[in-house]
Amino acid sequence: MPELPEVETIVSGLRESSLRRKIKKIKVTCPVIVNPPGGLAALTGDSFTGFDRQGKYIKITTQKGLRLVVHLRMTGQLFLAKNYQPDKHVHIVIEFAGGADTLYYRDIRKFGRWIIVPPRRDFADYIHAGTDALAIQQEELARLLKKHGAKALKVFLLDQTILAGVGNIYADEIAFSLKIDPHTPAGRIPPQKLLRAVQAVLKLGIKNKGTSVSDYITSTGARGNFQNLLNVYKQQNCRRCGAAIQKVKLAGRTTHICPRCQS
Ligand SMILES: [Zn+2]
Image (cartoon, rainbow, N blue to C red):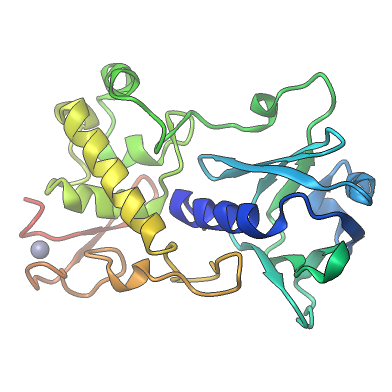
C-alpha cells in the first residue's frame, strides 16, 4: 500500500506535469471507483489547479471549483504516460489538450476511490485521518502521546486517525531508527525524539521517491528507490549489523525487528 512518501512523490510529480492543462477527455471504465459514479464527467474542459496531500489521501482542486479526494488504498497507481497501451486494470483515463502526457489510474484490486466533494462540504468530511505525519508539530505530537501513549509504538504509528501517513514499511523503519522494539509504549519516547525519527525516515523515503516492494510506481511510471535502503522491512538480515531479522505479528501486521539494534 502506498504510504506518505509514495503519495507525496506522486502528488509532486502531478503538480509538475499536469497543473493548468486543459482536460480534453475522461474515460471511466470502472464506475464503482468514482463516488458518485459518473461524477468525473464534469472534468471535461476543466483543468487541475492543485494537488495536495494529507496522510495517504490526495486532494485535488480544479479551475471550475471541483474538489476531489483520491485514495489509492492497496494497489492504486496514478501515472502519466505517452503511447501507453492500457491493460484491463486501467480504470480511469484523463487526456489533456496540447499533446501533454495522459493520466492513467490503474488499480488491480479496485479498492481505491475517487470521491467528489460536494459543494458546501469540506475535504475533512471525506478524509478519515489525523494530522499529517510530515506536517505535525512537536506540541501536537506531545499531546497525542499523552493521550495515546499506552499504545505500542507500532500501533500508535499505524493508527491513521492519530497520525496520518505512516504504514507498515515506514513504521518498522522508524522503530529501527529509534533503536527500540516497536512493542514499546509510544509514550515512553520523548516527543522531540519521535518527531525527528518519524520525519527523518519519511523525508528519506520521499528523497528516494518511495518504496517499490509491490505495486507502487511514481507519477512517471518509474520504480522508487527506498526499497534498496530499508534496514529491517522485508530484510533477511539487518542492514546495519547483519543480525537475522525477527518477524512478529504486531497490530495485525508482519513486523520486522533487529534483535541486536532494537533491544
Ligand atoms: Zn541490527
